[in-house]
Amino acid sequence: TLTVKPRPVTISTGDASKLYDGKPLTQNTATYDPEALLPGHVLQYSVIGTRTDAGTSDNVIDRGSVSVTDAATGEDVSQYYEFIFDEGTLEVLPVPITVETRSGKWVYDGKVHYGSSDVTLTEGKLLKGHYLFWNTDALSVRDAGSIKNAVYVKIRTANGTDMTHNYDITYDFGTLSVYPRRLTISTPGDEKVYDGNPLTDETFTLEEGTVP
Image (cartoon, rainbow, N blue to C red; front, side, top):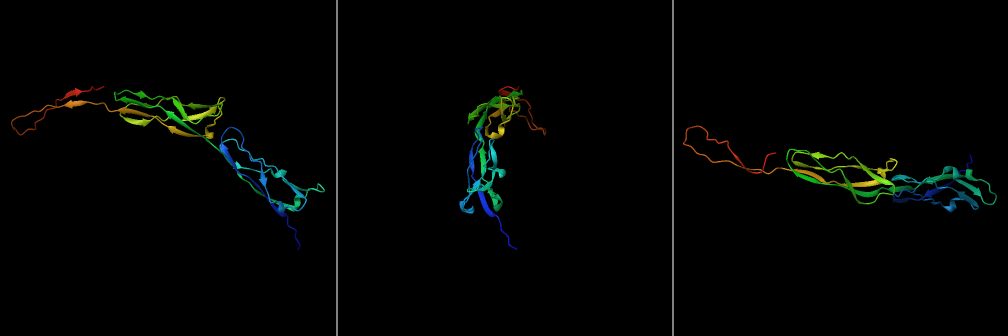
């Protein structure tokens, strides 16, 4: 059996990356070995890979656009070639931003205290038309101790489209602290002649501070 195999042609597209800017990322160039084609044969192709949101995708070639023609005759000779696709990667990186929340501190008084739910963008910048949204229900503390003022944000457009995935958010949480109330208590001394019973005196004096 005599078999004529198609000539292999590898078409490679390039890689590209950038920070998210709301615009499509493209890299429309491709390479191939010209010696893989017979003299006078011309390769046509179209690179259509595109990426707008943060993440990765293949820099694809439109399979329907790939062909080889004979420059002298205009004849389509694609059937004599085997096309191999080596597609690169398009990567859009999320924009780094830092969000900060406020701290609060109180001395224990038995009451519930509420932290601020406000957030501040301290590093980085949102794209035009993107806005911070967050839950305005404030965290509360009462007993002595500390918690993080953890308020998490979403980033949306004015019409509500979620764009949070296009940002790499670092949180700098404030701390809500309730400090123990300081009290100074003194107890008296006492004495008696031994009688076999314990000597006790349960009286005391609050020298400093108040009990809420």
